Image (cartoon, rainbow, N blue to C red; front, side, top):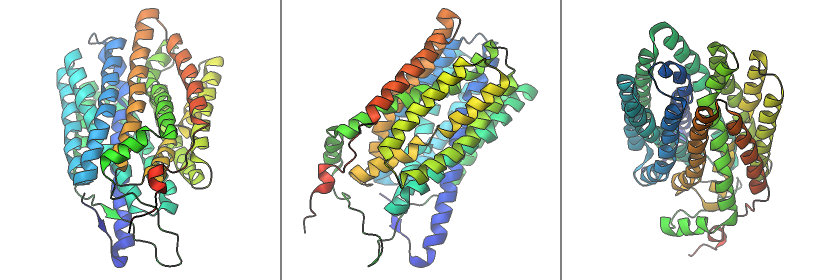
Length: 417
């Protein structure tokens, strides 16, 4: 893996450059992806049904999840930069295919398959691995939280831009502009060079226990027999299920309720802004309190927010309040999950292990996107889908709360001299 330890003279500056570039790439990658739901309504005029659109986004998420462990393993072995650049180019190409086709096949190939691979390489798994390895353990949770939070600004920035372009120039122009943004993302990745945190000096924070020399196979066996890791992975299904249903189908749900399309775009932007706050705050809390308990509470509070929203009349103001609350609970799971993985198994194979957990998240995303479309096409409403969000959120809380997050047996073994 291509990674170096920065000299003291360059350490501070190179770290800030790395964090800045990682944040920008995260902003663009997540902003593009989380604005896809805004294309649902204009594509319907071409005969694209809700279930077809939902399937394309479901395919995107399952491809994202299925490719994440492999993309992560490539980044762990060969370095993040080539993986980031290559997948950013695939991201851009997928958006072009979607824009030039306009049919179900092009939607599935472009927005589904190709964008799925693109997000896998430019999203959390690879970038958070780079960031985690660049900072010492006692600063990791808050730093990862800060970088993950920047992904929220992408939604706040790009969702209104997409809605404005769709209204002024049509959805094809909007999606091709998005492809140009993905090319900018590829250019930014050229500047990302991995670095490792300097080893602690005498009298400073104790060195982090490491399993850096352990082969991948042994670490995988250890992870897949760790009850806490398996429980966290299962609970992460609910996160993807809830969030992708909302990003993919909230605009259509609001249209059924007679809420203007502008509210949909504003709601996604509000989610982005409050998500940035929530993710950073959760990163700070994760450095002080139990990360598994915070993760469980996030699932519970998110589910309570959904219940409260549906129990009240659906209006523009209530939707924006719901978006603000949900945003606070949106991606705060990311620094928590990454912190738990790093503490349990070390950072040498972080991107691979994060990819395994994230695959569960994306299976949930696939089900959430697909069930939303099927629920509407079969019943004319999203009632079944909303009820499923609530039930699965409660199950996730029950799975996550009792997690044993003590380091694995591998990490507790004494070093061999």
